[in-house]
Length: 120
Image (cartoon, rainbow, N blue to C red; front, side, top):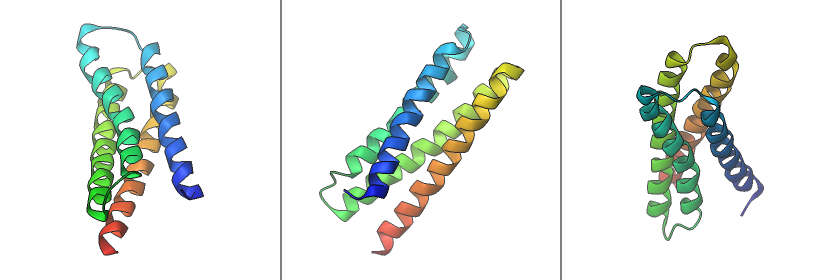
């Protein structure tokens, strides 16, 4: 495994763990459980699918798993934006901005990987 792959695996792992820890700090209210649960599921699924892609049995399998990571990154971004609007207090603003930025960057990385894997 090359260094860039390992860096991305680590980055995704820390993104998922840090986001789950952050979600625990948000107030618990019935209506907020849906977006919090969705963000939690999608943020860890991005990394899990990238991890699976590393064991792909073919280029097509790899491209498919990367595509799932891309879709999960897009969806996590959507749910993060919803949560940001629901929890629009100042104390959460900076954290939401950093998670949204990371989610956008990861989405772009997976889009580029998927595109390059199809060109090979």
